[in-house]
Image (cartoon, rainbow, N blue to C red; front, side):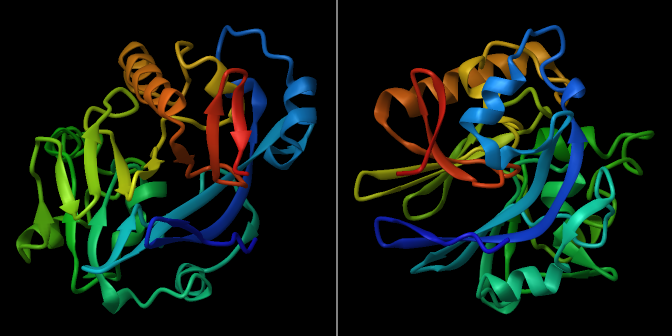
Length: 272
């Protein structure tokens, strides 16, 4: 699956990919008429066949002067939504990306769904033993509620991070390390965030689950079946993507086979 790293200013951004699974197109963009044949012609890498798309599970590693910062962590020991079509074990995915878990100093979790936060813990122990883990408190509370904590979320095992003092629940948008800030973009989950890396006027938005399929980039105002609050998610998606498009920022998408690109007038454009 080998995705090449990119550079944002002086920061290398590498991808740890645990694989991909087949998800049905019929579950995407409910009520919206999408020409999937045209989408497939424009973005052939995103599809497996006429009925399904390739749901990749990426985590991003940023090599900063303050140490490695992970943005999301992948599934870890959690199962995928659907059986893997191709799979790399979590430790091998880190190794393939050149990441030593002991070098990670901060983990930014865009939200607490298992495919983004499941790699924080292994066998009851922190996977990144030297890292502070940054979570929006709205997600921490939401997924800690009875009936949700045992769902498709990493929230349960992460209580050990809280006990060990390795959890940062700062609510306000703030800087994690120089040039990397988190911005609340709720809707997909209540505490969903994006991470924005800005180095020497080169900017990358690590978008969490703002997008699942490229067709959404041309329809940010249309609801997704994956969002807890579809209306609020549409507002967040439109706000962030409009700013990214207007300023020419690059965007990283956790579930795209080719995760780096830009938002253009006609939707998603691959990274030049």
